Image 1 (cartoon, helix red, strand yellow):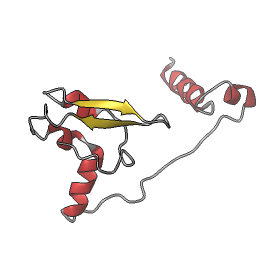
Image 2 (cartoon, rainbow, N blue to C red; image 1 turned 30 degrees about the vertical axis):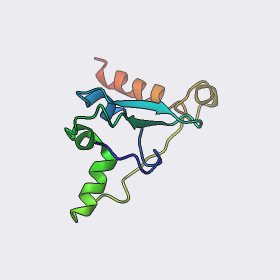
Image 3 (cartoon, rainbow, N blue to C red; image 1 turned 45 degrees about the vertical axis):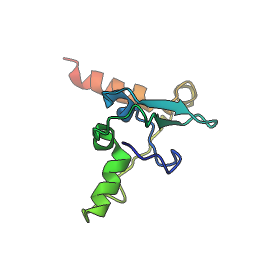
Amino acid sequence: MISINYGGRLCTGCHGCAVICPASCVAMVCDPEGFWYPEVNHEQCIRCGLCIKVCPVEKHKSQSQAGQRLEVNPNAYAAYNTDITARLASSSGGVFSLLAQEVLDYLAP
């Protein structure tokens, strides 16, 4: 069964554990700050381990315990649209509309 003794602090809120659980004993609950974390009904749990296998946090922990090299500094990119009107009307900084237009222009005959 998935361990949430870290109080949800490391949980990504992906809902993978809740979705994969065959006993439906993992429920996702929202904390006061709006972050989702798993809450396990221990009486209902059949201890199949699927929640641990699907969890990116648990996978990261098991890899580091096994001595495997982990990507500590993943690549990250930042961008925004220089058109301020498009940028302010968007939740992505206007980047999606630029990328979508590039794809459409590339695919256009």
